[in-house]
Length: 345
Image: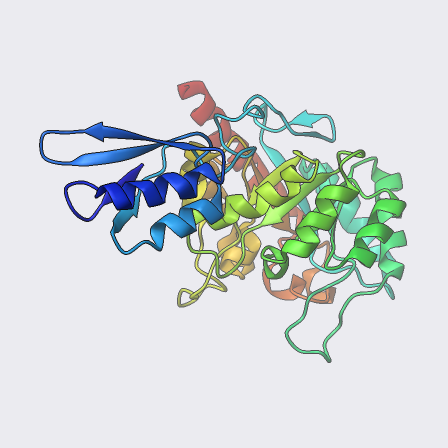
């Protein structure tokens, strides 16, 4: 819908906007009011180039969209009834829990195997384990491809599916070849559109689930959903959105916790939401409360860092990983909140 700055467009201006939209297969339908005339765009108004050109006209006040810019991720799209299933659980049917170590230590694999067994016993459905790690400092541990074998051994020992973050196309292929069940796109790569395209193409046939974390610098939720649209547009709709805290940081927390965006996301998209309370707050003592708040806001699941012996972990584990006992208690309490919410519905 085009709203001009004046009461109506001149014939010359109307001719110009008509010519622009015609390039994109659309037409203009004037809607004449008592005081002002507005101009409906008949056709697919989600073409960004067309909208940009119209908004650049000095006589146009603004463009109000009626259609969603998300052709696939919108909750009214053809994928609106799509369900994501992993580890025998369809997200939305019960609280889905991912848990495990921030980083797998290739020198001490038994810590991961013990953690994998412990998170299964605590009630998790999927094991997370960092194989490759994005680090601010180039001299800190960056992960090790050897850890991929340890991750998959954890799967074989427990029977639970596993998750691994990938940061480039080489890691993507290694993870897929190994049989990783969930690919994680971290906050630093949520705006890496080349990687998102590559993931969409690579998993189009396998339908591997993708956990897409929210970037630290994604303000508008449309940016977050648009990143998911890249993956869906290239062939894979098995996408989970993961809020994990944003910038600027909140005093005392690692990031600015954003679990409250869950209902806002659900108003716009059908995609399930799994919140990461560990990175949101960055300190183990605060993680349980953040996890419970996330479920109260309507999250479909939680992604929690846990370690059988956090002080022996590497990466973020010593600071923010829960022990198996605390993890089990948190999961039990979160499921109670889940049941209360869904009973109310």
